Image (tube, rainbow, N blue to C red; front, side, top):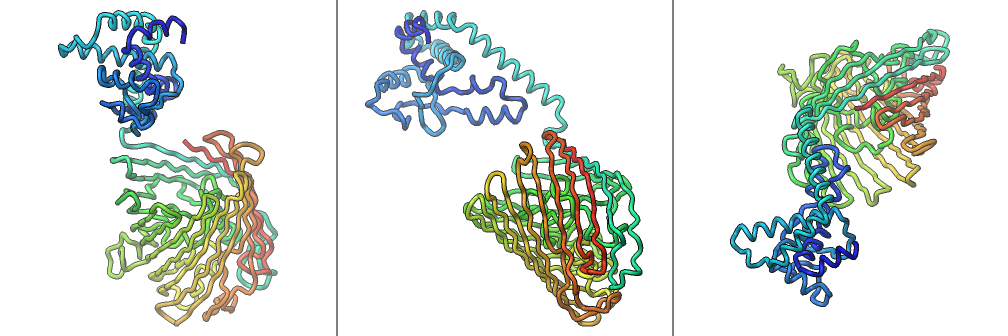
Length: 554
């Protein structure tokens, strides 16, 4: 402050009131160029809200021994234009800008006008009014600038309100452009004779997947999601003979648009979150999958198996309920129930026929316990009980892993074998540093038939991933994923083609990828999948899948 300013200040306590008030008013300084939309404006106003005080003793950080205590006491009781922070602190030692002073001066002028209007002008001396007039002239430029910025904010707010998509709904989109080709000598099959395997005849494909999400909120803490989906990315198994080569974002609708997901989530209490899926419910979107760098279909792993543990595919595409309990502390619980909305039009939650529908058709009961003792380490224990009502497309892992592991009872009675499986999983992620994270999972499934010949099967799977963050640039991730897809290790029913009741050999999944952040909205991910002994059969040649995925998000 200039010497002239201090000469003005010493003539009146009203001037000190303006200065002390301005020292606690961050609004003038913080609403300048930082606020760019309505939400940010609201946040700025909330974070800088002041609470009026009537006594200096209400300030927890002002003591009677402070040199300014008597002055503050007089200003509060005489003029009442000092505001403190919501936590009853005054913060008298923080720096004061000219804009803050101008805002405080303006508030005190309003207070003086109020006193005059209410016939209490005797509280304001002629000397005070003269000083205020001189101060107004001295800071006229700052006051004018402040008024101009407020006017500008009002105009920008009005423009946002006039042009926004909706007062309750936000549109979020994702577009994937994918170039991919499988390589190898022969297609995979299930028998042990490599001489009868057809050649792997593939071509380079260029395909896409588009998703538009409408997120609506009616209370600020709830969310209604409606997703539109279209794409033409083929399942690689049609070329390679094995689902182990599938991409994590495949799906062919011939680019016809459909609504494939509808759900509504809300807080029952501060610690309980409820999500109701009407269609397209997936546990891997409702719970923590402990593979944060690779779980996303558009920005994560390239492969289907590499995204997360196959246990999270239980109940995929269902309708039902998921409840998450997240109290303060390291432990959280999640429970859910999903019944697939469609299953060849026969056993879905939307089918009212006898022994179908929400409760009697295909369904999964799910539970997960998470323990996070620190920000760096997180571990989960997961259980899922799945019932398949019986049809030719029975699939224990929704097409992840070998064909035998997905339906080990195909030889019993393909048309109506009902299967019950108990799935157990353990998952963990460990953030070794800001640039290095490892994740892993292991799972065990025991499956039994409930119709036809009594049969059972034991299935195991595991994987681990390594993520090097900011590798080659901020936001980039170099990733490696290695594991064993679901494999039948024991069973009582022999496979029709191989005449065995287990997978005698072992497939291994190796994936390398590099997520290159071109901008906040564009990510380019080149990578390669290597499948050793496809279909857990060492008679099959190794198959490779080269992929270049570009993801646009908006």
